[in-house]
Length: 354
Image (cartoon, rainbow, N blue to C red; front, side, top):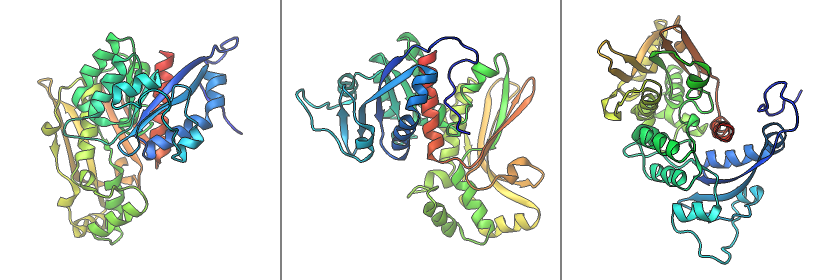
Protein backbone atom coordinates (compact mmCIF):
# COMPACT_ATOMS: atom_id res chain seq x y z
CA UNK A 1 0.00 0.00 0.00
CA UNK A 2 1.37 3.41 -0.94
CA UNK A 3 1.13 6.00 1.80
CA UNK A 4 0.66 9.67 0.98
CA UNK A 5 2.39 12.72 2.39
CA UNK A 6 1.14 13.50 5.92
CA UNK A 7 0.47 17.18 6.53
CA UNK A 8 -3.24 17.87 6.88
CA UNK A 9 -4.60 17.24 10.36
CA UNK A 10 -6.74 14.13 10.63
CA UNK A 11 -10.38 15.00 10.05
CA UNK A 12 -9.66 18.52 8.78
CA UNK A 13 -12.50 19.56 6.49
CA UNK A 14 -12.41 21.20 3.10
CA UNK A 15 -9.76 21.72 0.50
CA UNK A 16 -6.29 22.80 1.58
CA UNK A 17 -5.41 26.27 0.25
CA UNK A 18 -2.33 26.28 -1.96
CA UNK A 19 0.71 28.42 -1.24
CA UNK A 20 3.63 28.64 -3.66
CA UNK A 21 7.26 29.01 -2.60
CA UNK A 22 10.46 29.75 -4.45
CA UNK A 23 13.24 27.50 -3.21
CA UNK A 24 16.97 28.24 -3.43
CA UNK A 25 19.67 25.72 -2.57
CA UNK A 26 23.28 26.38 -1.56
CA UNK A 27 25.43 23.28 -1.97
CA UNK A 28 24.74 20.81 -4.73
CA UNK A 29 26.52 17.70 -3.57
CA UNK A 30 24.88 14.42 -2.61
CA UNK A 31 22.49 16.00 -0.11
CA UNK A 32 21.45 18.84 -2.42
CA UNK A 33 20.76 16.55 -5.34
CA UNK A 34 18.82 14.13 -3.14
CA UNK A 35 16.70 16.99 -1.83
CA UNK A 36 15.73 17.96 -5.40
CA UNK A 37 14.79 14.32 -6.14
CA UNK A 38 12.76 14.08 -2.94
CA UNK A 39 10.92 17.32 -3.58
CA UNK A 40 10.06 16.16 -7.11
CA UNK A 41 8.86 12.74 -5.94
CA UNK A 42 6.57 14.30 -3.31
CA UNK A 43 5.34 17.25 -5.35
CA UNK A 44 1.78 15.95 -5.77
CA UNK A 45 1.49 14.93 -2.12
CA UNK A 46 2.82 18.26 -0.89
CA UNK A 47 0.23 20.10 -2.96
CA UNK A 48 -2.70 17.85 -2.09
CA UNK A 49 -2.06 17.27 1.60
CA UNK A 50 0.09 20.20 2.71
CA UNK A 51 -1.10 22.99 0.44
CA UNK A 52 2.48 23.56 -0.73
CA UNK A 53 3.67 24.11 -4.27
CA UNK A 54 7.23 25.04 -5.12
CA UNK A 55 9.59 26.23 -7.80
CA UNK A 56 13.32 25.65 -7.66
CA UNK A 57 14.60 29.11 -8.56
CA UNK A 58 18.20 29.03 -7.36
CA UNK A 59 21.11 26.59 -7.07
CA UNK A 60 24.61 27.56 -5.97
CA UNK A 61 27.91 25.87 -5.22
CA UNK A 62 31.61 26.64 -5.50
CA UNK A 63 31.77 24.66 -8.73
CA UNK A 64 28.73 25.96 -10.61
CA UNK A 65 28.53 29.49 -9.20
CA UNK A 66 25.30 31.39 -8.48
CA UNK A 67 22.51 30.05 -10.74
CA UNK A 68 19.16 31.85 -10.48
CA UNK A 69 15.96 31.96 -12.51
CA UNK A 70 12.82 33.39 -10.84
CA UNK A 71 10.68 31.57 -13.42
CA UNK A 72 11.97 28.24 -12.17
CA UNK A 73 14.73 25.77 -12.97
CA UNK A 74 13.73 22.41 -14.38
CA UNK A 75 14.52 19.81 -11.66
CA UNK A 76 15.43 17.12 -14.21
CA UNK A 77 17.78 19.45 -16.06
CA UNK A 78 19.25 20.59 -12.75
CA UNK A 79 19.99 17.00 -11.71
CA UNK A 80 21.63 16.49 -15.11
CA UNK A 81 23.84 19.53 -14.39
CA UNK A 82 22.30 21.38 -17.35
CA UNK A 83 22.22 25.05 -16.43
CA UNK A 84 20.38 27.88 -18.23
CA UNK A 85 22.35 30.64 -19.89
CA UNK A 86 22.23 34.01 -18.17
CA UNK A 87 19.47 36.14 -19.66
CA UNK A 88 19.13 39.89 -19.53
CA UNK A 89 20.30 41.09 -16.14
CA UNK A 90 23.81 40.52 -14.90
CA UNK A 91 24.38 37.12 -13.30
CA UNK A 92 24.54 37.15 -9.47
CA UNK A 93 28.03 37.52 -8.01
CA UNK A 94 27.32 36.88 -4.32
CA UNK A 95 24.76 35.31 -2.03
CA UNK A 96 22.66 38.44 -1.55
CA UNK A 97 22.42 39.14 -5.26
CA UNK A 98 21.59 35.46 -5.82
CA UNK A 99 18.78 35.42 -3.22
CA UNK A 100 17.32 38.56 -4.77
CA UNK A 101 17.61 37.20 -8.32
CA UNK A 102 15.98 33.89 -7.36
CA UNK A 103 13.24 35.68 -5.37
CA UNK A 104 13.72 33.00 -2.74
CA UNK A 105 11.10 32.35 -0.08
CA UNK A 106 13.16 29.50 1.41
CA UNK A 107 16.94 29.05 1.34
CA UNK A 108 18.46 25.63 2.04
CA UNK A 109 22.09 25.63 3.24
CA UNK A 110 23.82 22.33 2.45
CA UNK A 111 27.40 23.43 1.88
CA UNK A 112 30.48 21.80 3.44
CA UNK A 113 31.11 22.18 7.17
CA UNK A 114 33.76 24.56 8.46
CA UNK A 115 33.98 23.44 12.08
CA UNK A 116 36.38 26.24 13.02
CA UNK A 117 34.11 29.19 12.19
CA UNK A 118 30.88 27.95 10.61
CA UNK A 119 31.55 30.22 7.63
CA UNK A 120 30.48 30.97 4.95
CA UNK A 121 27.30 29.10 5.90
CA UNK A 122 26.52 31.58 8.69
CA UNK A 123 26.63 34.49 6.27
CA UNK A 124 24.47 32.57 3.79
CA UNK A 125 21.78 32.03 6.41
CA UNK A 126 21.96 35.61 7.68
CA UNK A 127 21.53 36.87 4.13
CA UNK A 128 18.48 34.63 3.68
CA UNK A 129 16.78 35.82 6.87
CA UNK A 130 17.56 39.47 6.21
CA UNK A 131 16.04 39.09 2.74
CA UNK A 132 12.82 37.72 4.24
CA UNK A 133 13.36 34.03 3.46
CA UNK A 134 13.15 31.06 5.80
CA UNK A 135 16.63 29.62 6.46
CA UNK A 136 17.02 25.84 6.64
CA UNK A 137 20.40 24.27 7.27
CA UNK A 138 21.98 20.83 7.01
CA UNK A 139 25.26 22.44 8.07
CA UNK A 140 26.21 22.05 11.74
CA UNK A 141 28.61 24.99 11.79
CA UNK A 142 26.00 27.76 12.07
CA UNK A 143 24.30 25.99 14.98
CA UNK A 144 27.56 25.63 16.90
CA UNK A 145 28.93 29.10 16.17
CA UNK A 146 25.89 31.36 15.68
CA UNK A 147 22.74 29.66 16.98
CA UNK A 148 21.50 32.50 19.17
CA UNK A 149 22.31 35.18 16.60
CA UNK A 150 20.48 33.34 13.83
CA UNK A 151 17.52 32.47 16.04
CA UNK A 152 17.11 36.10 17.09
CA UNK A 153 17.51 37.32 13.50
CA UNK A 154 14.82 34.89 12.36
CA UNK A 155 12.43 36.09 15.07
CA UNK A 156 13.14 39.73 14.22
CA UNK A 157 12.26 39.13 10.57
CA UNK A 158 9.28 36.87 11.20
CA UNK A 159 10.97 33.86 9.59
CA UNK A 160 12.22 30.45 10.69
CA UNK A 161 15.73 29.11 11.20
CA UNK A 162 15.55 25.29 11.27
CA UNK A 163 18.31 22.68 11.20
CA UNK A 164 16.89 19.21 11.83
CA UNK A 165 19.32 17.51 9.42
CA UNK A 166 22.42 18.55 11.36
CA UNK A 167 22.28 15.67 13.87
CA UNK A 168 21.01 12.16 13.06
CA UNK A 169 19.86 13.21 9.60
CA UNK A 170 16.07 13.39 9.36
CA UNK A 171 15.34 12.03 12.84
CA UNK A 172 13.08 14.60 14.59
CA UNK A 173 15.28 15.52 17.54
CA UNK A 174 15.37 19.32 17.59
CA UNK A 175 11.69 19.62 16.66
CA UNK A 176 10.66 16.92 19.13
CA UNK A 177 11.45 18.87 22.28
CA UNK A 178 9.39 22.04 21.77
CA UNK A 179 6.48 20.24 20.11
CA UNK A 180 6.29 16.85 21.81
CA UNK A 181 8.14 17.32 25.12
CA UNK A 182 7.15 20.77 26.40
CA UNK A 183 8.22 21.58 29.93
CA UNK A 184 10.79 18.81 30.37
CA UNK A 185 14.23 19.42 31.83
CA UNK A 186 16.94 17.74 29.78
CA UNK A 187 19.67 16.71 32.19
CA UNK A 188 21.94 14.93 29.74
CA UNK A 189 22.32 12.60 26.79
CA UNK A 190 24.50 9.73 25.66
CA UNK A 191 24.79 8.11 22.25
CA UNK A 192 26.61 7.12 19.08
CA UNK A 193 26.40 9.98 16.59
CA UNK A 194 29.14 9.20 14.06
CA UNK A 195 28.45 6.38 11.63
CA UNK A 196 31.94 6.25 10.10
CA UNK A 197 33.62 5.27 13.36
CA UNK A 198 30.91 2.71 14.02
CA UNK A 199 31.64 1.04 10.68
CA UNK A 200 35.41 1.25 11.16
CA UNK A 201 35.35 -0.28 14.65
CA UNK A 202 33.11 -3.11 13.43
CA UNK A 203 35.50 -3.89 10.57
CA UNK A 204 38.44 -3.83 12.98
CA UNK A 205 36.60 -6.43 15.07
CA UNK A 206 36.37 -8.53 11.90
CA UNK A 207 40.15 -8.57 11.46
CA UNK A 208 40.98 -5.43 9.47
CA UNK A 209 43.55 -2.83 10.45
CA UNK A 210 42.46 0.77 11.00
CA UNK A 211 43.68 1.74 7.54
CA UNK A 212 41.92 -1.22 5.90
CA UNK A 213 38.70 -0.53 7.80
CA UNK A 214 38.75 3.13 6.73
CA UNK A 215 39.28 2.11 3.11
CA UNK A 216 36.27 -0.21 3.28
CA UNK A 217 34.16 2.55 4.81
CA UNK A 218 35.20 4.81 1.93
CA UNK A 219 34.34 2.15 -0.63
CA UNK A 220 30.78 1.83 0.68
CA UNK A 221 30.38 5.63 0.71
CA UNK A 222 30.36 6.18 4.47
CA UNK A 223 33.77 7.77 5.02
CA UNK A 224 35.07 10.94 3.37
CA UNK A 225 38.21 11.00 1.24
CA UNK A 226 39.87 12.61 4.25
CA UNK A 227 38.32 10.84 7.25
CA UNK A 228 40.22 12.82 9.88
CA UNK A 229 37.19 14.66 11.30
CA UNK A 230 35.48 11.32 11.91
CA UNK A 231 38.48 9.38 13.23
CA UNK A 232 39.62 12.21 15.51
CA UNK A 233 36.16 12.77 16.98
CA UNK A 234 35.55 16.24 15.53
CA UNK A 235 32.33 15.35 13.70
CA UNK A 236 30.91 13.78 16.85
CA UNK A 237 32.04 16.74 18.97
CA UNK A 238 30.30 19.23 16.67
CA UNK A 239 27.08 17.23 16.99
CA UNK A 240 27.42 17.11 20.77
CA UNK A 241 27.93 20.87 20.83
CA UNK A 242 24.84 21.43 18.66
CA UNK A 243 22.65 19.29 20.93
CA UNK A 244 23.98 20.89 24.11
CA UNK A 245 23.61 24.44 22.78
CA UNK A 246 20.07 24.03 21.45
CA UNK A 247 18.47 21.51 23.80
CA UNK A 248 20.30 22.28 27.06
CA UNK A 249 20.86 26.00 26.55
CA UNK A 250 24.56 25.57 27.21
CA UNK A 251 26.94 28.24 25.84
CA UNK A 252 29.51 25.53 25.21
CA UNK A 253 32.36 25.99 22.77
CA UNK A 254 33.72 23.22 20.59
CA UNK A 255 37.14 23.33 22.23
CA UNK A 256 35.54 22.82 25.66
CA UNK A 257 34.35 19.34 24.71
CA UNK A 258 36.73 16.59 25.86
CA UNK A 259 37.61 14.79 22.64
CA UNK A 260 39.49 11.56 22.02
CA UNK A 261 39.25 9.84 18.65
CA UNK A 262 39.45 6.17 17.73
CA UNK A 263 43.05 6.39 16.48
CA UNK A 264 44.02 5.84 20.13
CA UNK A 265 42.57 2.30 20.01
CA UNK A 266 44.53 -0.46 18.29
CA UNK A 267 43.00 -3.28 16.26
CA UNK A 268 44.32 -5.72 18.87
CA UNK A 269 42.50 -3.85 21.64
CA UNK A 270 39.27 -3.82 19.62
CA UNK A 271 39.41 -7.55 18.95
CA UNK A 272 40.49 -8.30 22.51
CA UNK A 273 37.51 -6.41 23.88
CA UNK A 274 35.15 -8.31 21.59
CA UNK A 275 36.64 -11.64 22.68
CA UNK A 276 35.99 -10.60 26.30
CA UNK A 277 32.34 -9.82 25.57
CA UNK A 278 32.83 -6.08 25.21
CA UNK A 279 32.78 -3.68 22.24
CA UNK A 280 34.53 -0.40 21.59
CA UNK A 281 32.23 2.44 20.50
CA UNK A 282 32.82 6.17 20.11
CA UNK A 283 30.49 7.52 22.79
CA UNK A 284 29.11 11.07 22.90
CA UNK A 285 28.01 12.43 26.27
CA UNK A 286 26.74 15.60 27.88
CA UNK A 287 25.45 16.10 31.40
CA UNK A 288 24.48 19.03 33.56
CA UNK A 289 26.66 19.29 36.65
CA UNK A 290 25.38 20.37 40.10
CA UNK A 291 26.66 23.91 39.51
CA UNK A 292 24.47 24.20 36.38
CA UNK A 293 27.22 23.91 33.79
CA UNK A 294 27.25 21.27 31.06
CA UNK A 295 30.17 18.86 30.75
CA UNK A 296 30.52 17.14 27.37
CA UNK A 297 32.85 14.53 25.93
CA UNK A 298 33.55 12.29 22.95
CA UNK A 299 35.77 9.25 23.43
CA UNK A 300 36.03 5.54 22.67
CA UNK A 301 34.65 3.36 25.46
CA UNK A 302 34.36 -0.35 26.09
CA UNK A 303 30.70 -1.30 26.47
CA UNK A 304 29.25 -4.57 27.76
CA UNK A 305 26.98 -6.42 25.34
CA UNK A 306 24.11 -5.69 27.72
CA UNK A 307 24.38 -2.01 26.75
CA UNK A 308 21.99 -1.24 23.87
CA UNK A 309 24.61 1.00 22.25
CA UNK A 310 26.97 -1.98 21.98
CA UNK A 311 24.52 -3.67 19.63
CA UNK A 312 24.52 -0.92 16.99
CA UNK A 313 25.95 -2.01 13.65
CA UNK A 314 27.04 -0.18 10.52
CA UNK A 315 25.67 3.32 10.00
CA UNK A 316 22.96 2.98 12.65
CA UNK A 317 23.12 5.73 15.29
CA UNK A 318 21.29 6.28 18.56
CA UNK A 319 20.93 8.69 21.44
CA UNK A 320 19.37 8.42 24.92
CA UNK A 321 17.99 11.59 26.49
CA UNK A 322 17.79 11.71 30.30
CA UNK A 323 15.07 14.06 31.50
CA UNK A 324 13.61 14.95 34.87
CA UNK A 325 10.46 12.93 34.13
CA UNK A 326 11.72 9.93 32.13
CA UNK A 327 14.39 8.73 29.72
CA UNK A 328 13.90 8.41 25.98
CA UNK A 329 16.03 6.56 23.42
CA UNK A 330 15.97 7.12 19.67
CA UNK A 331 17.58 4.82 17.10
CA UNK A 332 18.08 5.73 13.46
CA UNK A 333 18.49 2.53 11.46
CA UNK A 334 21.07 2.59 8.64
CA UNK A 335 20.25 6.02 7.18
CA UNK A 336 21.27 7.06 3.68
CA UNK A 337 21.59 10.47 2.06
CA UNK A 338 17.82 10.53 1.58
CA UNK A 339 17.41 10.74 5.37
CA UNK A 340 19.38 13.99 5.47
CA UNK A 341 17.40 15.33 2.52
CA UNK A 342 14.18 14.40 4.31
CA UNK A 343 15.24 16.47 7.32
CA UNK A 344 15.49 19.49 5.03
CA UNK A 345 12.10 18.73 3.50
CA UNK A 346 10.49 18.34 6.92
CA UNK A 347 11.93 21.67 8.05
CA UNK A 348 10.54 23.30 4.90
CA UNK A 349 7.07 22.00 5.69
CA UNK A 350 7.33 23.06 9.35
CA UNK A 351 8.57 26.53 8.41
CA UNK A 352 5.68 27.17 6.07
CA UNK A 353 3.10 25.78 8.50
CA UNK A 354 4.30 27.75 11.53
